Length: 149
Image (tube, rainbow, N blue to C red; front, side, top):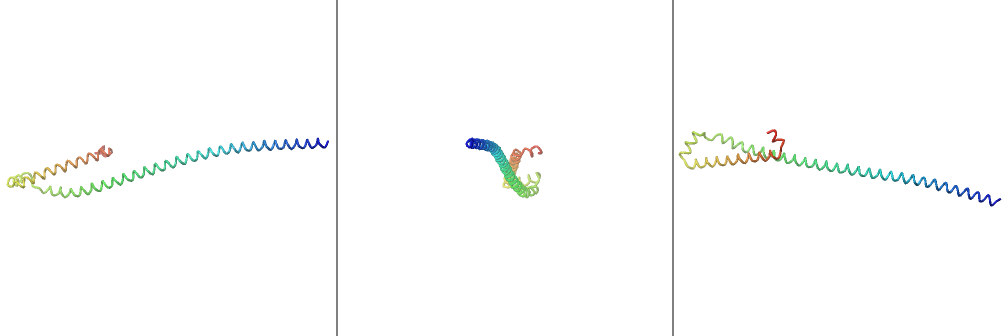
């Protein structure tokens, strides 16, 4: 009878071990499932962070590009304004040139004056042509200004 009681105790302890093993297996499966979910969430967060980082880099590059464009526009504007000031002197002086009736009297008496006047006209035409070409080139680069013009 004593050995039967020992067998019952062993059977009971064996079934306790089986229950403990089953519970541990259940916990391990839950832990594995939880771990898988956490790893998936981590990958999702990592992908999201990479996407945000790429967006920020793109915005930074766009801002740098716009900043450089503004810098170039300002430099172009400054040079254009400087050229306008320089040309203003020439335009003011050209208004002091004699009118056609007076010019013909000067030119008819002195061949050097006539040649200088012809050279002045040629130079003025070339300058005006260059300015018009520059204007066309600038308008081609900036379609919005072309529409307003």
